[in-house]
Image (cartoon, rainbow, N blue to C red):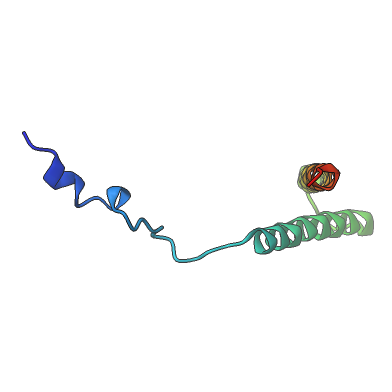
Length: 96
């Protein structure tokens, strides 16, 4: 049984390997997109708190869930910022 003729047809083994996904996202765009998502979750939490304070008919568990989600998102963002800052400081300490 010969396997080689079948392997030639696979794009993984070709010399000019290219990704099938044509959309390229760089780190800056990815980070900006995530910042917008975190901002939106913060705004949704604040809106839920305002609605609760106004006495509107809102589910208390939904308000708590939005607050918790915004809190987790912000803590994750803070950790990412700290890691990026540590990496930058480590690079600046390197001697060339």
